[in-house]
Length: 191
Image (cartoon, rainbow, N blue to C red):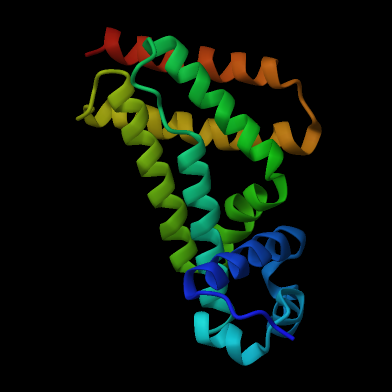
């Protein structure tokens, strides 16, 4: 018999199931019947929380995104070089520990649904603003903004290879730090 949970608790539980299921299978292969069974609830109750598979998928991607943003907060109490290193290490740790979900967000999410594309862009823009602020440029020039957006793309691509090919985390971290340093130095020199 299903346990009666509060709305927030049940929703969080369902999102945890979604994180697991969508991390293990491509969107097309996921069936709501299987999700409901995995959660120990009826399909009707699942529809009570989410209007359908697409809504559930988007809520799951949003959960992945929010967890990653929490994990990669920049610590303003640290010197800039340490704060950036800590944030990039947190990014690598998060994507390593949540590799299937990260790859689903990065690869599957953006290709499946236009709202997923917008969600991925929201995350990128949030990270861009965080990095720019940490570097002392809360309102970056268009050129610096473009360069930082490029860095985020680099971090995503390198992160995906880090996960799929098992590269050394310290070497990847060093590459990302050096790349960001080179981008910032170039933009400061041309400002």
